[in-house]
Image (cartoon, rainbow, N blue to C red; front, side, top):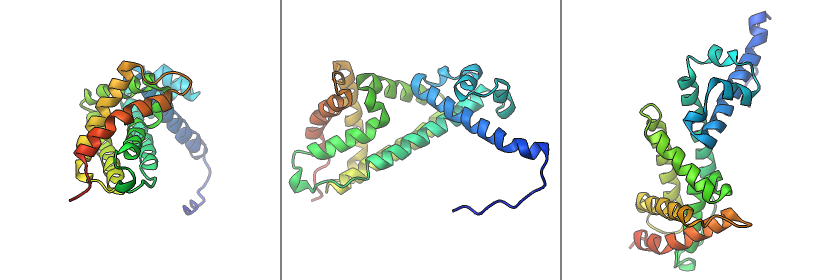
Length: 219
């Protein structure tokens, strides 16, 4: 539990500080939502202020420019996704002897890679990889994306290790999962009454044979 802050004399500036901090946080959070939905280009001062329900002037007060807001928004979005990946890769998995065809671990890998984008089915996959490519092409944002990629790779390695398979092949398994998820979106697999379930099932079924070959149990 954090320690309470010492009491300081009140002033108009101090009374305004919590509101200012809250407005800044609201702008970053709302801009992160905009990036998730439409990429960095979806963030403008007006759109962020409207989504955060704060005055337009708050944007220029708290940020040097929209690019500064976008950088912080991307950092928050990737932090959210990293936390989601950690949760999705923390579950127990059956040992290799009970999952010889790799179906269970493949499903876990697909779920971790998809994250919250899976809820939208094929449209979510298109959004996920569109955002990824946009960020990769921006020199200012690419380092954050590379750090997030390491988080996802480490999560896949944990899943492989938990399943009694070779965690050092996580990078190759992740690349294969990415490929099958894109293929699922192209094939329109994530549709119907349960788009996320259909998408995960389609991709995991096709990932499993390659995963078994790439990451067998350690010798």
